[in-house]
Length: 289
Image (cartoon, rainbow, N blue to C red):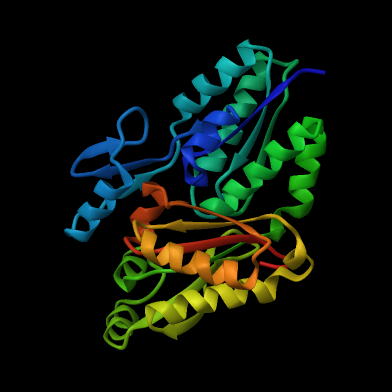
C-alpha cells in the first residue's frame, strides 16, 4: 500500500504550525492589492492586509493556479505518494475544478497513482476541520480510501456560522443590496450567515449589535450540535483581524461547553477580501448545517 499526503487550499485557515507539523501540502489561492499579486512566496501579514482594507483599499481574488497545482502534485507523485486533496467549496471558487482537472491530467501520466479530491462544500476553518479529521484518521491507520469515504459521508456535519462587522463588503460581494447595506449600517444590523448544503455562504438571520451577533452564533451553534454537543472535539474561530471579539466568543463557548477545545486563527486574505475586517467565523461539528 502506497503512502499518501494530505493537501488543502490556503483558504482552510489552519494554524501555520499545525500545517508544518503534519506536512500538509497547501495550494495557494491568490489576492491582488495595489496591483501586486500575493499568495505564493510573497504575502502580506494578516494585520497589514486588513489595515489596508480599513484604509479603503479593495483587493481582488483569484483561484488556484493550474501550473502550481500540477507542479505541487507532480512533486508528490515523483516520491511515490498518493494524494488526498481537501478542497474549498466549488460553489465559491473555481479552485476545486482546477484541482480536479490537474489531477485528471496527471493520472494519465502516472496511471499507478491515486489522487482523490474531496469537495468540502465549505470554507475557512470549516474546510480546515475536515483536514484535521483526515490527519487524525491517517494517524489512526486508516487508508486513503477509508478517509475519503468518511469525509464524503460526514462533510455536511462540518458547520459554519459567520458574522461581519461591515455590511459594505457583503454588498460589494453581491450578498446584499446597496440599500440593505446602507440601512443596516445605520441601525447597527449584523447579519448571521452560514454555509449551506450546496456550499454557498447565505444569510440565516439578523441581529442588532456586535456582542449580540456573537452570542447569537454561539447559541445557534449549540442548538445545531445535536449528538456532537457532548463530544470532546474542537471548535474553531476564524477572524478578520478582530482578536478581541474572537476571544470574547471563545469565552462564551468555554462557559457553555467547557469540555471543548477552541482554536483561533485569522481568516485568510482570499476569503477576507469578501468578508472584510472584523468578520468572525465559527466552525464546529453539528448534525445539520
